[in-house]
Image: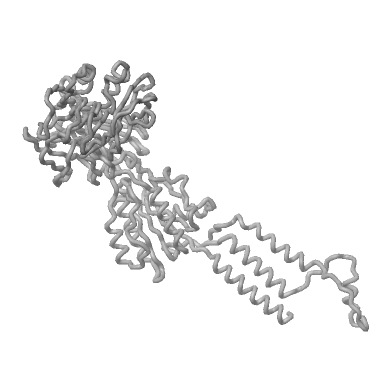
Length: 618
């Protein structure tokens, strides 16, 4: 027996209060009667000095005490432990985070969770319904308030683990909102509790729904590859690997490095103490487009984090074209010193069919059509289809950064910069303002037609900007942003995330190859492709076809690092009033059936009997 509202026991004070009322003598009223001969005994009792009388047998007293005891018992909310489902409507949330792929014997935590969920479905009564939610990167309602056991079972059978980051807070909020709108609802969370820290301050305060947690995890032994970086060295490729031990005992095993063809390049032994990390370096590796690191621990619960790919980055020089009809010594000099670019200065305006370049720089000239590649436009002189220009204005205020945390404004101080006048730019969808002077936009940056574009609305000769230390710093930041293919490799990402992939200007065909060998044609214009990373982990390849040949780019997708700590945790978010008994029930994976309503019904029945007894004068 569990007591869900033991703090209400103080209502038991009503029992002695009822008894005291029966001990007190009734107040006497003066009445004129013919004779008191037959009332002598009664008069003797009334004339006693004591203000109370002897407690006598009274059926009404007994019934009132019984009703009071039942009422106090109901307020303490007694509950009996039970298996199965007790609520009229159950919101079932199944954790599908990456840690649910951990092995528990011969099955994964997720497969065990599905089996337990199916068992709950089979125990549904004829009048009971269930809503099923998958708690992945986004909460997904698979079935809504259904009593069809076949439909519920089929939905559970399709559950798959999420390899990226999960959002348990949204799943719990959604479950609480559904339960709040459906009277008689309860929430059941099936998982390993790996989201405990994220849910520590979360509760189902929006509803009075009960919460029940079913633990699917037991083991905590797991070693994982936390980082794997490769880069070109003086005598070949160098690699740095870090392994984390999340288990309760020392982790021992082997680590092996392979090339992109699966050839074994190097191997080593590792022994890492509990809650520690080990770092291993490999030198003079043969040149390869990508490298795969694999660990084989003696005891391991999650095999998905035992393998990771790394793509070495070798900086290459991009191709840039500078077109400045009036000449600009400041711009020409800074373009030769910033970035990793081969700068070609041309005297004639590039035509619409000009050969693709990584970066085009236009000074005082606006092209009618955007060429293939990213664009840096300085001092626009006229309006075009893609550039709204509305004249020129004198500036009365100094320039100020709009978003100081933007990468292009990093370490750039505009306080000592003076600008005389600037072009008036209209609204440009896809572009944001970086620098402004009063209500005039001085620098805009964004993406138009798949191309990264930066626009300086002022002429460098109409300012002292080139004479300030901020000029080369700002130009370095701008060029780096406009030529991402030459400044950084494609970052390692997790499934479900948004990833920006630099595209080679001028490519006619593109295709993306998945780790399982599946190929997908890519239709994209411009220099940047933004995708949502698929659920497959491993090495991806982007192939681009150019007039001069083919180009391949690689990037890796891995399991989210936060899922590698598979230590089971107790998830308790039921209510701030939940007592120790309720928490024990949640840890045990069993539910409770409250007896409050039955006791309340008994109280009403006793009060009905008391009323009938009073009417009959007993």
